[in-house]
Amino acid sequence: MSDLFDVSGRTVLVTGGGRGIGRMIADGFADAGAEVHVVSRRLDEQELSEAGLRPWTADLSTETGCRDFAAEFSAETGRLDVLVNNAGATWGAPLEEFDTAAWDKVLDLNLKSPFFLVRELVGLLEKSARADDPSRVVNVGSIDGLRVPTLSTYSYTASKAALHHLTRVLAVELGPRGITVNAIAPGPFESKMMAAVLAESREEFEGAAPLGRIGRPDDAAALAILLASPGGSYLTGTVIALDGGLSIVSPR
Image 1: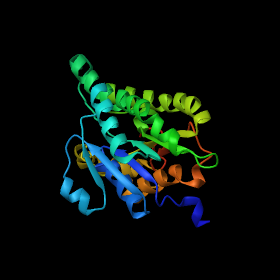
Image 2: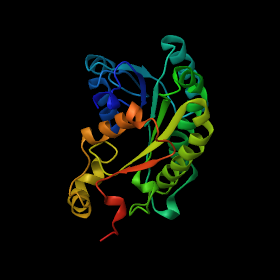
Image 3: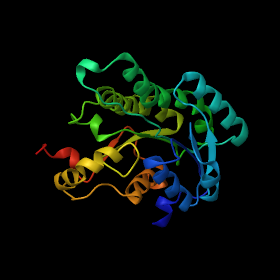
């Protein structure tokens, strides 16, 4: 049974893995024996290295940035078993004040970046795939891509809903090439992105969730490891809400 969830020795790349949910996932894979690389525009290289993670600095918000990073990563490592597209941004403003810059910043990182990275790294993923053990892509979406949020985060919720459907499209495209593509849709977790919202509404989130709490680091790590393990090899095109049931209840 333990072999079903064994990810030891796998090469994992987590975008936006320096903090938040990305860091939770990266630490989980490292603790499980994987070789974990994290890439972000800003990160503490020494702290990450001491934690057993291989840091990479890159701006993934542009197609050129994705291409250049992928070329450097491919040349140095020559292997990739699991790609976790976690890097993301959000923006909130009233409808009348929501401008083009707010749309572009969020869509570029949340939607375009995962697509371009898959495009550039698909060769490495395909190379690592085996008939009984596919390579994996795990996209980190959001429950705000499954339901209408209460905040005015128009570009964020649209980008996450689009990422969920892109996950399904890529699953059909890449399944025959030995690559599964799935998405995690987290609810509230402790992170810099959620800090202000949780400071104001933590009790509201906890009270609304059937399980009565927000997410913990082990919740994020466990689901990502499942999707990357032999036990998850028959899952593709799925979008899994990781939210304690929050997305299935009506707002109170």
